[in-house]
Length: 385
Image (cartoon, rainbow, N blue to C red; front, side, top):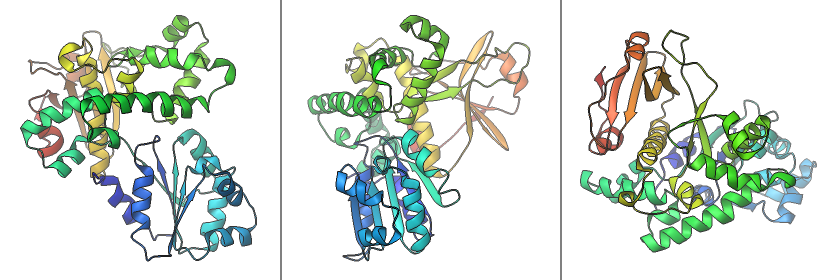
């Protein structure tokens, strides 16, 4: 089993009288981490509750504190798996944590849309939230002790098949079968539960459209016209896809300076490229693809997000577009600005003049396959623009 960085982050928050909420798509490893943390308490002190089981749902929907305490018994640490299945789970969690301040509670959910809405108000100031993403290159390097040469092979597999735990250890044939199954059975299943029955046929068409636009600006208006639906419907569905951890959005950075383009467009990236490739039925090697540039940009975006999360760093992330150029990723922190361009092949790249004039403090780096290992795993070097 590949050890996840997030496991230690969650472990450090236990015992503080707050509920741990662990989000992430199905099959990503939430239950594995939760069960691992259960094993760290004495036998009999841990309790696992699977909310996919109706009797468990019903027991946790009780508003009787006495009944809830009977359900958890003498447990010191409990896992409530797929907690979004329980009506008003936030109230249940509040009752449990208020009456058992020394109790460790780990609640997992595969839909932030459902679970977050249920726990946000009842648990205000009483929870820690984490998102478990697909395995990162840093996690794989730590587990397998990759050399820089090994990483070149590893990143190509991540770009092709993605980082679900059951896939990274499989051969190519098994990986292709497994990621196709995940995309069809779990991605569609979980997302369809969140959409209206009469518009479920829109979901696969929208996912295919977004899959073909990675690395490009996305116009909701243009997608709506293409698919023949209202702008509001596209916006709602994209929000649902984001809450199900299938895609995430990157906003444009604008300082309203001359030479910059100000619009409401976004870039849309996929949490897992294996899922994306399975959705368009293209799991071919990189040298047989015509979308490798977009895949590389999406891959670098994913790995950067994971790296910052693993290091406990936070920044506001954007892309920038001007009349005469674009910057793939701009990270802003209170004391610094970093700019990145993602190119699979190492070629000279200059920052657009308007960007340099607007953000003269920015540190700029081009990320390509030859410096990827240093950027993500062995260092984080950048040169001033």
